[in-house]
Length: 283
Image (cartoon, rainbow, N blue to C red; front, top):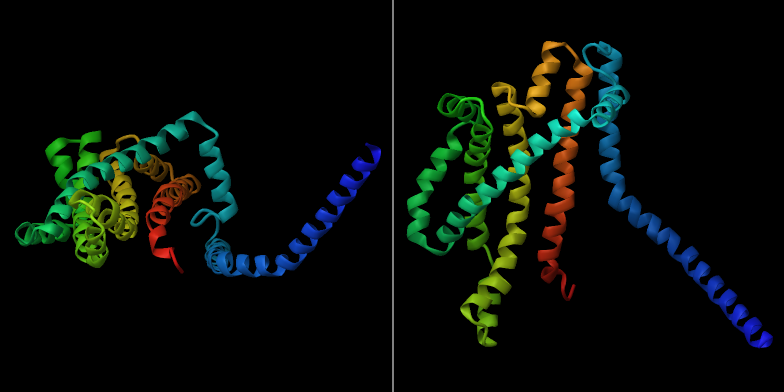
């Protein structure tokens, strides 16, 4: 038994040395891949922060706080329960409004993509809605509904809905119909052709459009909250403006951007990669 244990220990040491050798050989390749993947975004972020710091040094902290001051103020917001309530209110409104837009605008876009009559009928309506500025919708909903949560939800939905509608129509029209014909040749039903082939292509194409709608939704939500003074990031920005607290104002802007990035990279990008896996098969 002691001899077997010694032999097993020796084998484990040899295996460990082989693995370490493999890692040493792979390290330069892994480092090069990391530089290619994360180098350009890191360089762009460093350039942005450098310009920001230069502006702070040129104009002073009262006009433009430094990135460090802004991050400290942002952590100060996150350290309080009220700060999380403010952030949660805006994020919840954006998510709910985008869900409404996707249900209505996405469904109409899906129908219009498959039925030419519906597409021609709704084309001028979509153009008109897209042509109305978001600021105009903010003012109109304030007049119609007053300062309320419902008015903000309506504003976000009516601004992002046409974008999702047009994106859905384009996704349906640009799908590869040959894949559906191939599925039909193998005996797939019409529903299977749509659910397993067409819908995957549509979602993969629509994901970037949804990212644009998400960014626009945050902008519209903050603008509406700022005008209506309903609890959220916009109302917090209005309060910071009244108190001339530029540190806190920039902190809420940074937190809004972080919330946007968290939703995009935590939900939208993974969904896009998952539904787009079929494109990478065989590559």
